[in-house]
Image (cartoon, rainbow, N blue to C red; front, side, top):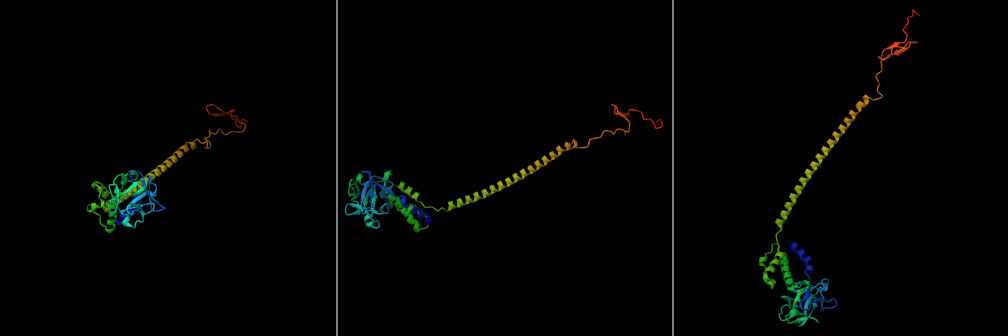
Length: 290
């Protein structure tokens, strides 16, 4: 269960950055790469120098990797995030005040940003283009961090009913319940077993269907082979039957011979009449008469 929380925690580190837009001036807070100064520029979601994220009580800039910090009594700049004494901020009702101080707030003007005790629109900061409350981002990050560290220190399922609501002061119960549901932890054993059982059933069903298909294909091939053999035999039989009358009436076969004429004798003239009788033209004279 720990690894299931550790991986999403590191993957979502860069997805929680937001723009800090002043409600009055409608410009976004931007850090500088040249020095530790801060400027107010037109909001640009693609600029890393305008992207900020909550790291505990600190606001970290994604472009400079430094944190928003207090300089003197009213100055504001960026400095390394390890100096928690000057980089901590309280956030309530879109107002940012140095950690432990409730007398001054981060205020924007045409000249830049500074600390002042004004609580108007100049001291209210919104979440970029959506103009949401940046304090909700801090509360959501606090809930995520609490679940993350709870997952690291225990292998048991975290009981969200025992969560201390003082960590998310300023949020209504409905939003808190939504966050607790979103970052909930559950025992996935029953779901995993169900998926495993369904996979096994699907595998068995697939093998049965495969066997039925193979059997049907084999029977169909055997049936087609038998039909082909029968057709060949029938064709051969018909060919043999067609050859019999041809052989009976073939011109090469011997024809019946007509009755042989009577043996001819030298000097005789034979006459064959219409009735088929054959006679000599002259009567045979006896040798005596000759």
